Image (cartoon, rainbow, N blue to C red; front, side, top):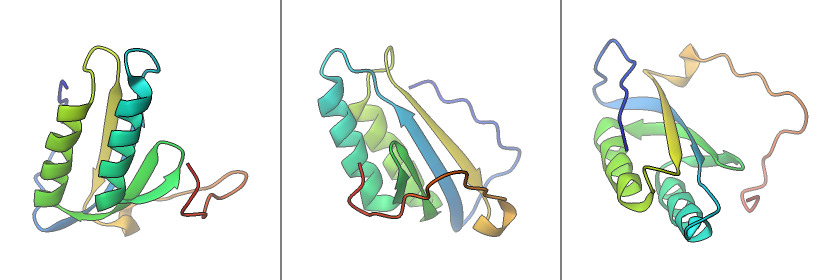
Length: 105
């Protein structure tokens, strides 16, 4: 996975992350999607389809990134991680139905 770091500072301790992914359906994509979903659920909160967010340590985010890199196909799949020092620095607006069912996939 090609990493494009667009942050201008390094985070220490905890941070707030939003992770979104798009896994191709071909070439065992469903299996990769399931594996990435399970990995993300260990570290972050599932908020919508292929979107997770939550507070996470820098070390755990690094670990999650490495685990995801081992699962995805770099030619077919995409993962984007938005990072912030704290959730309060984000303005989140939800349009339509808010997904709050922890079993929603």
